[in-house]
Length: 461
Image 1: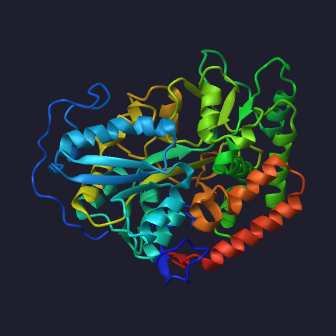
Image 2 (image 1 turned 60 degrees about the horizontal axis):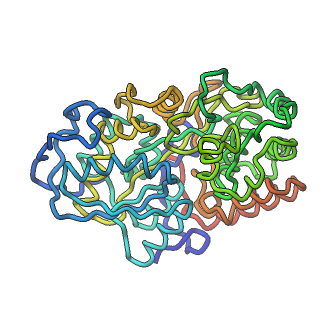
Image 3 (image 1 turned 90 degrees about the vertical axis):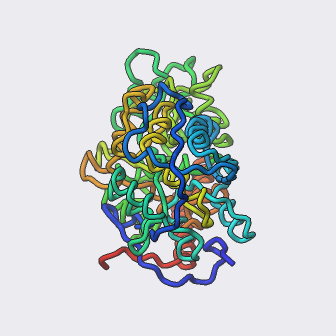
């Protein structure tokens, strides 16, 4: 029986390859037999204006799956789910299969574990955490990519992305979506971007705003991870990329002074009068998007983090402290196969191709696919986000890209809104009174999670 790492016996050791940041768990494939018949190549596109005609090259040969039913578990927000609909519609059209989607929102990790424990497996799940992927592989709960899918991924996905879904040289996932957590999204009204500057200038601008203006920031703290994104950006900018990597591997404790400095800065934001939308601590990330891009408009900006950029969005860079200016945090959503099935294998192969990526990009989606055409992206913010995530984690200085810290961690520490780091940071954000106590709580949670999770050793060590 597989259970979340807080409850499991220690799984047998598996070596995990890394690239760029060693915390990026190398997590991938033997062949799973594919289906035989050739793609019927329907003439009508689900969205013919959104993608290149004919789905060039490796998108030509999906087999027919008439009558097959494929189950897919996702953690999409409402906006991401709407953006994903044309992708699945086109897959159904090309193969004749029917895909049943089940949404888990922020509860995706618990849903995956429950499905595995209950032997009620979806064919495919879309998860955000390389840490979770590694745990599932260690518990023999994932099916490797088949040869055709692995070859397609190798042609179109950067090695640093592939390493995040590879265990012992075997690939287990297709990175379909990317995300960036280092932009402030706001409605594009054709004027100048809201001033950000460095962190001090950002806070001064918040303090000096007219009292009649709408609140500047919506956070969506109830989802847990948005507060983590604020902290991680502040930590990366304050401590630098090397310290960020070490913290992500728990090679330095959460009681380190560098953590205290980032928490102090997060508390500065929370205490700035008029900076935050009222009740944002009790709202989800989806609520925050609605607050900024819905009607009536309740706030001016939201920190990015989703995988689909709103159609009316423009973007400004995160107002980083000075140590690592311009460094960015990226993340993504990886498709994994939870049970052997021809339909699930073909769905992963499709999600690795250019056609699926371009349908996704056309509605604001962010994709790690290296060769997908960006000309149909709805705005400059979406194009820039796609260009940022394509190389995957790596780089130095202002070009540094680091993968989301909490997603790299054991799931018991980083994946649940109501426990571990997400809960502790949410509670600190709501009442930022005691930095030292918060650090102690984070360190205890980290020690517990790393001690019970599968031991994932970077390759080459």
